[in-house]
Image (cartoon, rainbow, N blue to C red):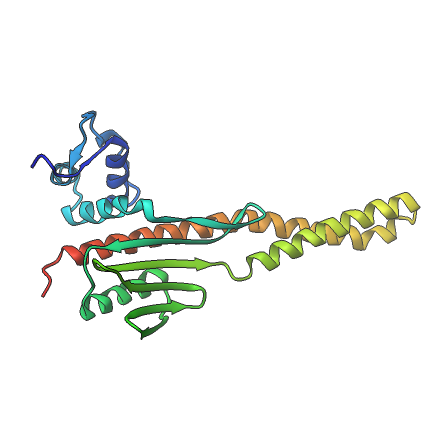
Length: 228
């Protein structure tokens, strides 16, 4: 088929990487500059023990990557992530129930299922999945934010700034070592809070993005099953 979608080298690497769940696949990405079709990718996957279904899911995730939403950030640290997946047709009630099960398993949360005005929702605190009708099918919106991130970063910044300011003032006034204990402790706690968030929040954001990639792939698998 001359009009069949062909995946370029970097896309091939990414699809195999996702399908193999972090396997070493860089060497399999082929040097054909014309790209590989999905069926050719599935053949490559079979050679290294990757099921065609996993290749299909990973290819769907790559196809929808353009819908990844920019990370929300506060003082340069990620505080929210999300993505939007446009689906070529509406999900049936059964498919929505299957998707809810996937959401619960992937995010390790039961969540709450509601619906209103044609919109179906699964929410768990700040984590959400909205299924909205469109002119051609459905749109799946996935998103979450770290609720306490901004407060912790703000507190850490204030503690560091106030602590260092007091240290400078007390040293200038020559108030002695005893007077420095509290401001030094305040600055240390504030700085530690900032460092801890600078480490944990990017990890949190990457994990959530990987989970959303997986959900996008599972939606692709549902859409490729026979629709009753």
